[in-house]
Length: 89
Image 1 (spheres, rainbow, N blue to C red):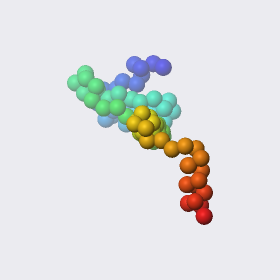
Image 2 (cartoon, rainbow, N blue to C red; image 1 turned 120 degrees about the horizontal axis):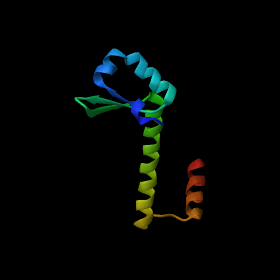
Image 3 (spheres, helix red, strand yellow; image 1 turned 90 degrees about the vertical axis):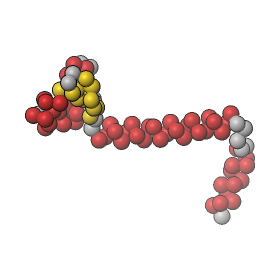
């Protein structure tokens, strides 16, 4: 990975938008857009964004589960199976 290839000034992005979008698609790596020499935005392709968004949702569910376990909000396997069977009837 060459991060120097993934940093572009906003002037370059304005003139070469299609090239930057093609780079996003082909590498899957985000592109950092700078303004006045400072990082201003990060661009990423839609697939990467969706995958990251889905992963974040899963991590939030895992964290919620861990919190519930620590607070004693658990059910036995037997009780869960009984409740599921009851709902399926």
